[in-house]
Image (cartoon, rainbow over all chains, first blue to last red; front, top):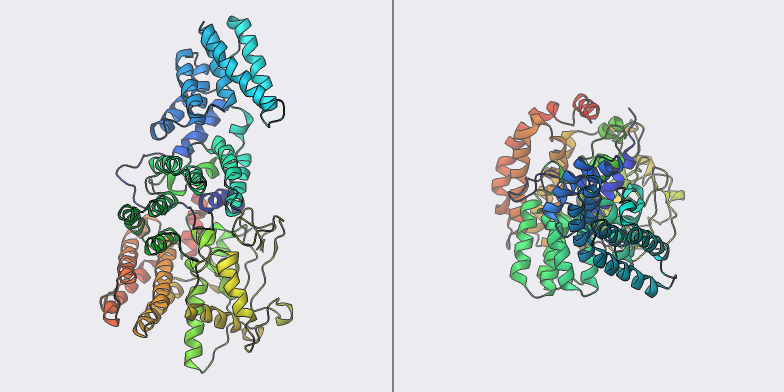
Length: 307
Length: 315
């Protein structure tokens, strides 16, 4: 009986990979009882299904999958962008416009979304908005001055938008996810890189790697939790809280998100709320878990434990 | 992640299920199966290398070795990334030996290797070089061991302490526990390797570990060593969790209920402000009945080779 466990477990590694420096993230028990508020689907799984459906030009299927993801993570830039591609595939330009607008509102550096938004405006006859979006792209290109890693992507986007504005009726709408969104291997690699970077306390670089992983895995609670962790370590507490909330919306019993959120609460001096997080972990972790033990140490120390 | 059967494993099932659609059968819900790259998963889940442990007439030494042996299989000893991944010392050193099929993504090269200076596991020892090394057999040729086990020297204790607190970023272990792990590793010798090369993995063995851990915990609390008592209770609960994973089949509902009750009760003791020998009375009274029920259910669990085969086929 052959069992190539390695491929299957790669993603378990990701699931449980942790910033060992000051505790870690990880998934809650595979067997825990779902919370009554828990979504009855796996947001990350739906996201991958949506990407696969898009690749196969099954746009209705993709639209359904992304709608599920957006139920728990409505402001996720990548998911909104991909939902826009699905709308475009269904010739629903208004729907596409709405999703692209949400995507760039959540992340104005998401160049493919800016590109498709501008082209969609052009197709819909809204030349003013198309030009405005093109100007944003040109401004990004000017700032980049050909030296940033998005330089090529920006040039391509600007050309495509200029062509669409010039001949709106002939402009082609993209319905295929960019490579970054397709490659599970690339997502794995980015995630593992992020784990290492976090342990090396290189949080800004870790966030970049996590954003790449996020393109592959969507509103994945592990990725969101790490985004929360890295932002917290950079002192961006409100941003971190936002990510923890998103992670817990996607997976209400996520052990890593619960632990880290609890640590953040300790850092903010809210021990009452931190103890609530700890009580939740003690309930989730029927057979004990590192996340509960680490948060317990934080609560007892009223801050980061000495060792 | 606990959102029901679907999202239960975060990146495990979500992306893995897609990325590995063509993967061969596996049982990712079993901790014992997670970190393997093996040609024969069934064998790896039913047999383990035989332990090569020396025994001593000195009861204190035996007791210390036993504490160490229990901690050796407890992920919480390592803390950090390893604990969250369910890795204990015994994940790499099965029964104090080696694990030729161990494989952790990003950490292992070939199966049976690990890069102990990877930033994936450690915030202290990452060297930026991927250089996995073969996992040594702790009961192997002493001449090939990189750390001296000379009882007059502290090399082994320093090494294990560094491994726990730096290589794996774990919390400072209680002295009794660290001493125990050192004593356990010292007790592993080639001369104690007698009998068959492998031994079966059984429910009995796991239950015995739980019982010993609880008894030792009670004694440690009685002796005033609460930190060690709590480590041992945590280890007992972790082993109950390993048993629970083997009952995650439709026939295992009653067994799992019993296991959860047993763990909940130990958790209450573990978290209590004051623990005395009497704190264990209720648990000890219930344990024999729980053991009976579990043993009766064993043939319908993933301790059974036939059941494992069935599940592997189904997956």
